[in-house]
Image (cartoon, rainbow, N blue to C red; front, side, top):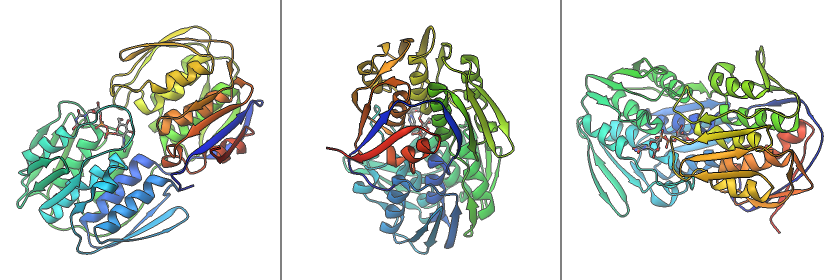
Length: 422
Ligand code: UD1
């Protein structure tokens, strides 16, 4: 589904979930891979591309710079020639991941203009680490109310120590360094699987990157890259959504294509709660035995429990047996969906970056609103374990990250319908 209109998810309680669902390609990977295509002329082909709204926004962004894109189910072809290295405000403000074009454009054209980043509505999200890392490689920036203009006629390799393992900063600096002269070392780099996926595609394009997936990434600069074909890794956040669904509703499911090795920590956490998971030849097998136990948890950079999983885990804890303290360490203001869960009968109190979740036996259906991609999906998941009908009003957030959340849950036996908002 690729629409930004207001939708209602109508969830009626059902029984246990059974069957299998295929996890699509990762949103947080494909958008960066698409940005990386701007670094090499020719036609790039990406496979396992999710049919989500953010991919469409990235296509429009690349087209606005002069690339051509061609989409068919699961595939996007991007043809790149000379580009105008300007990412316009009206597209960048729709999606924060647009910032991923900054490093590639500077590397290839020595100049880049970027409208102010927007994206999910969960607090202030600066790009200071992106800019200071790129400055270490010799770029200079001027900022105005309209955005950022970068100049980098001669990028030189350098040592970058990140104050925090930022995913976006690691990616932008890594991409710029690919075409800088000499060697770049990024210390305290983010280790998310999506970064290793990006490095793997860049290496196919001709880059010389080692250490991706670890805290130290080393990049030897090259002068030219070529267009490639690449398959996007599966979406671990989408997979966690289905894990939570089977946790709330009970049942036994196969998450086809999901990678256990990308989800060790979250599987361990839900395991402590009583949800059984194991790697399967075709993905991840999961079994929800009924009511789960509470456990405390905190979000951390990978390999810790991702902040993106938290809404699902809070939805699970809302109906678990016991009390849990949940601590958010990455983003301020990522508890907005808690008010909606409380409307559904959850007993949750927030204080700064902590939430105290006292599990209740059952939630009750209500009319609630989604505030971002994962929060919206978490409310749909929570509704699977509620008494009565729940309506989740979603202003286009969920389709930014899920090709067909309702259809996937229906495939597992849940009763979830979508309709235009009334
Ligand atoms: C990416 C993911 C997002 C995920 C997040 C953390 C995409 C499209 N989005 O976002 O889903 O929740 O990683 O796993 O891949 N920060 C700064 N200055 C900077 C950059 C970041 O202060 O220059 C701060 C942020 O405000 C935040 C923390 O660092 O508090 C982590 O942000 P970062 O890892 O950069 O997240 P994103 O790349 O934006």
